[in-house]
Length: 569
Image 1 (cartoon, rainbow, N blue to C red):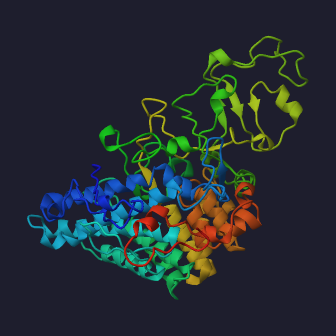
Image 2: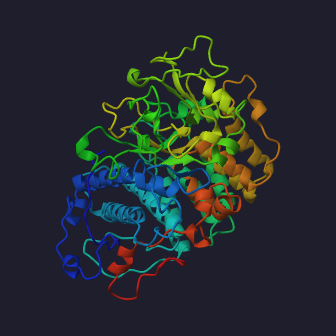
Image 3: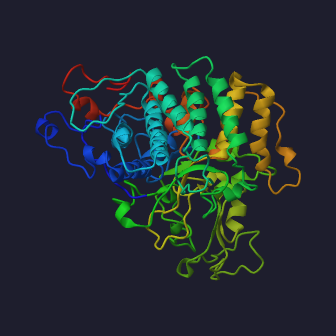
C-alpha cells in the first residue's frame, strides 16, 4: 500500500518546542486536505495512508527498542541503545525513541479520524465498500491507541479529525481510552462487509479482517484486566473472544513451528494480520534505521564477520548488534531441547565459513585432542565447513582449543557474539545493507491460544481450559516427534510459567515489554529474579510507564500544563 503522509501538525502531538509560536499558526499543508477526505478518491487514499503508518511501528527500530530490549529476554548488544535498554540516567523525557512512537501514533490516529469522520459525506462508492473501509480504519485506530495506552497509561483521547493546529491538551483516564478502543473493535467486528479472515475472497495481504479485530479485542481485554482500569468480566471476555477466533476464523497452526517465520510464509494460514513492506524505495526510508523500513533483519545480527573464516554476507546479515539474549533466555527458558524444538528454530547457532582469506591455521603446539590430520601451518577448515558453533552447553577450554572451528559455549557468549534470533532473516535482499521487504507478522493464531490460556488461568474459564490451550501450542513445538503429547503439562504452576511459554513461542515478536507490564512482572523478572542484570541495576517501579515526551509537554502552551507520568522529570 502506498505511503501517504498526513502532515497536520494538529494531530495532538505538539512536536514544537516552547517559543515556536510562529510555526504553530502557520497554514498546515498536506497531501490530503480535509475536503479531499470527503471525495471517493480521498476517502480511499486516507485508508491507504492509515495502513502505511503501520510500517513506522512493525519493522521499525523504535518499537523494537521499546518492546524487546530491557526485558528478561534481551539486553544491550555492542552497538545497542545505551539508555532506554538499561533504564539509566540518560533515559529521560527527551528520549528520541519514545518521542517518535508517541508522535507517529497521533499522526496516524488523526489520519484515521479523517477517514471515519468524513465517511458519511462520501458519494460514488458502494455502501458495503464504505462500511468496510470504516471498519478497517477503526481496527487501525484501535491498534494505535492500544500502543499508546500500554506505554503511557492515561493519554489524550482525540476522537475527531483535527485540521488546524492546537496548543492545548489534556490526558484522558486510561479507562476511557480502553472503552474507546473496545468500541472501535466491536464496531468493526459487527460490520457485515468486513472481511471475515485473511483468506476471504478479495482480501489483500495485510488487510484488516474480523479475525484480526477479534484477536486484538481479546488482547485488549486481557491487558486491561491487568491494569487499574480492569473490569469484572475482562478475563472472561478475553477468553471467549480468543476462543471465537480459534473456532470460527478458519485459521490453523502450521504443523512445524519452524515454518511460521520461514521466508515466504508471512501470509500462511497461521497469520492473522501482518504489516506489508515494499521493495519500492519511494515508499520506504528514509534510511536503514527508521522511518518505514523493515530493519528487524538487522537488529539481532552479531559480529560474526570478525571471526576466522567469515565475512559479511546477505545470508548471515548486517551486524547491527542491537541486543543479545540474556542467560535466562538461552539457558533457562529454552533449556529443554529434546522434545521442544523451538530453540533451534528460533536461534542461529552455526555459521558456515564463507571467506577463504581468513581461514585459521593450526599453530604449534597442536593441542591434545585435535583432529588426527591437524598439522602446524595447515588450515583448520575450508570454505563450506563449520566456522562457528554454539552447542548450547558447556565444554572445557581444552575442548575449545582442540576443535577446528570456533566453539562457543554459553559461558563464552558476549555482547558481540551470541546465539541470535533469526525469525526476521531476509536472504532474498539484493544487497547486504538493504532493509528487509518481508511482511512483519503482528498477530498469529499461536498467540491467540496463549491469550486464551492466560485468560482462563486468571479466572476467565477453567484450569482445564487453560491447559487445553497452552498444550495445543506446546504439542506443535514437538514436531516432528511422533508423540507430541510428550510436551503436555498437567498443571500450570504460576503466571510465570505462561510467561515462559510466551517467550518460547513469541521470542522477539515485539511484545515482551508489554507482556511483562500487563502481568505486573516487569520489575519482578528483570530485577527481583535478576533475569536481566544489566537492566536490574537501574530499573525502578515507575519504569512500567514510558515518559511523556518533553516536546509534548513544552508544546502545550494554553491551559493547564500537560501532566508527566510519575517518577519522570
